[in-house]
Length: 391
Ligand code: PLP
Picture 1: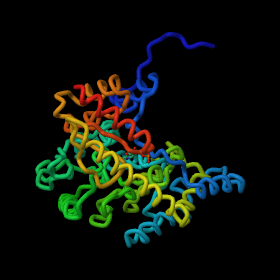
Picture 2: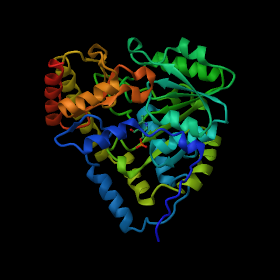
Picture 3: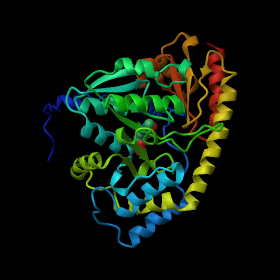
């Protein structure tokens, strides 16, 4: 059998989805030799051993079948316990759905909340998936500019100006990808007030909540607007489990029920043994010790990169307090961010992500990930310094 060379058409909905620029650049870089990638958006650490052992044991014990769509009860309970333990927030297993990562949690939220033509406010710059999710939900995207002078946090007055009768959702993501910014409590409260006053949902995507530096604190949005918040979260970054595809959403019960309906026909359930390992990840002290070790290592790398970037001409870093990214201005080079990323790849064999991949307001910046070893980071910094000195 062979496929006939006939043209096939996908729906407009799917055709509109933009492939991530981040991946395009990676593909080019992967064909070159001696390249150091600071483009990666995932931990370079291995999943902690206790979590891997839990998955192996679960497989041996026969966790190889379907589970309830919303997730196994012990994992939904463990998520509820987790919010109590870390933030003193009382949620119930019924408020939790176990998803295939934060990606799925976000997608389900968009599909469950937004009618065609509803407006969704998405910050600019922002992580790439929200705008694509909005397109698939046939919602209207309204971009809220984030400015370096405001620490890349929303200006509540500006946010208010964008609210109309059709506004149904605001996206919030702190600690932030790509800027590394964390959210001030005052700003969180102001966003919560606006959401409550105008009956808007907040999609709060919080997968980097444990990677905080210089004494920064994370403020989960459900603390301020529980009835208006759909919280997306993930095991991917916290426990270095990107490949496991395990995440969850927390929301009012009616919304969770809606999300479960769609999830039931797309994913069915997250792999059963993966869910069992998720319980260990959340409940076992050994996993939290591993998280703290990873955080410390990120903290050292962050310091190292920030120090070295100071010596790189034309580049000015925004000092991040969270996640594992540095958003750095390249405006003084006179290049556009995409042009700069390509130039740096050719000239220094270093991959960074152009800020424009995250929205128009990301133009003039690049995202540098420090989820890679100190040796590689040092070498990359030296290469960048040399290349820019010769500019
Ligand atoms: N949200 C943000 C802000 C991210 O940076 C990522 C991954 O890079 C995701 C969501 C998706 O993560 P996952 O689906 O692996 O949980």
